[in-house]
Length: 293
Image (cartoon, rainbow, N blue to C red; front, side):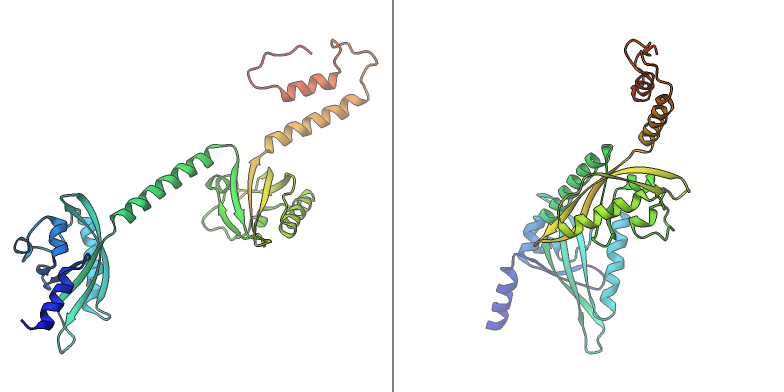
């Protein structure tokens, strides 16, 4: 072995990354020290063993599909392999390249691997936090969304999609597509535009919207502009379905108009006007004791 070969071997053996050479049949021809240390085995034990001893037929098929790229240009692929080691299961990200002969036909494979288990664990923990946060957000009466200053939706709560009866084939792309022709909606849009231009929060407002099945509902909207470097980049908001509440308020208003012309000068309802009695019926919680009128 000449000096250059010794230097090259030292470089390979001192690498913290895993380095292996594999036959086209998938058996190990060479492993560096880091690979043996990971598995707790000697080079002699590893030589000739199968490179991808994976558990689970589905996972094995995924790796096999990826590795077919090694037999056509650019003769490279990246796969992730879960290995059982003395320290437990470890996820190794392998970058594999084919060794070609003079006719550019693969004769062997070389791969460098890196332990990405900490990254995978962090990603898993992050997904768990996101799921917990989403569960918390979706458990309340409010439903959340964000949209761009030009009304293109960025995020919509799944509950909003259910409320509006959104379908997969819907051609509606903006939340404004669901607004009815009710004149009250113009005032709501004006508040949104004002929040975008000023970067300041507007008071809550109500909108009438048409659902996918043709019904009309009322929602109460509470929005806040998201400002970056003095410019509004998005609107974040929450909404509540107030359709039933609107019916109650309309009924109370009609009752007030009805009793305006017939209210007696002296109340005979224990000091309460008939309108107040009617209003108490509308506002009374379910299960409350019935009140004599």
